[in-house]
Image 1 (cartoon, one colour):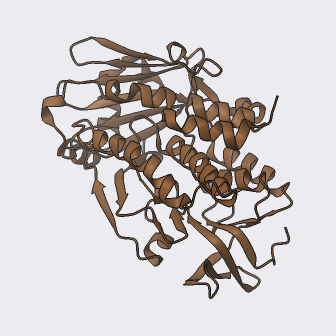
Image 2 (cartoon, one colour):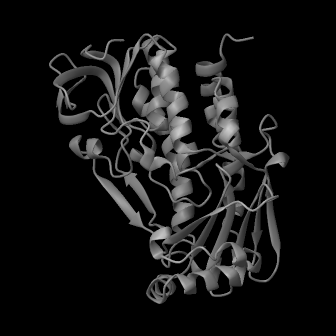
Length: 400
């Protein structure tokens, strides 16, 4: 579709994986779709982010024809081993769960994932992608739907759409413009990330080590031959380490994993690190009229369990299914139906994370010795079971 066209059956603001995936699924069912994003879709600033795709997400991207390209740069992880402060081990083995087609998770660079989705969408005749384009104003269209006033470096334009989906992040400006209120829970235990070259022969495994003082360390192989080391302590511990400098952080990490000490020698400056502050975001509603929320715009989650991207992928599947079935006359209120299926499941994960003392000092301290993952192991491996029929209707229906 020519990018100057001013109408879309579905307009999507936000060109991350969720928005692009929803657009692709709809376009392959003949919908006119337009994706608007203020950034370039191959934004190099996202190069350091390599989230994990769960087994159901991998099956989806395999079915869509992307697996070969993702696997070339991806890093499989076949198990998660949690080491308690008392020396016990708790193991999540992805091969033991139901997703036999891909019995592992895989870290993929975010630019690679958005790139394959963007390229696929560009090949769809009813799709348009508008990178580097800002939304100046959102109004209701006279004949229903929504009108967006847009601007890029060359011109201003307008676009009207029957449905408008906001997929522009957990602090979504579009959600604010739509007047949807939100509750935000701040986790007060920041995570410090160190990215190292992956030592030769490193196992395809995530290790999480807990200490008696409630600090913990995560060690995970990620895409592009790297090793991500994550240290988390109480707020006072973080402030102490931050004030003392990088040498203190190296000492904290080495106390958990002496085998990493030789690889930490090049870490000399705090600017070499990344500090992540996590939030749970809970909008009061997921839709208003024919405007809906998708991915982080609908539900920011903590990184524990690596479910942010996978939740967004499941959102896109369910929302595509509901919109396509509404167009065929099967259901009357697609956005409400989407929210009814997804919101309780997501909220359960959010409440679980908000209660973890490993993530916040406001968590249930009686759970301090509990596994971070035991209560969500099935979710991590298999996602929401009720999403499966949506996948079969939208992606695999009619195929041999």
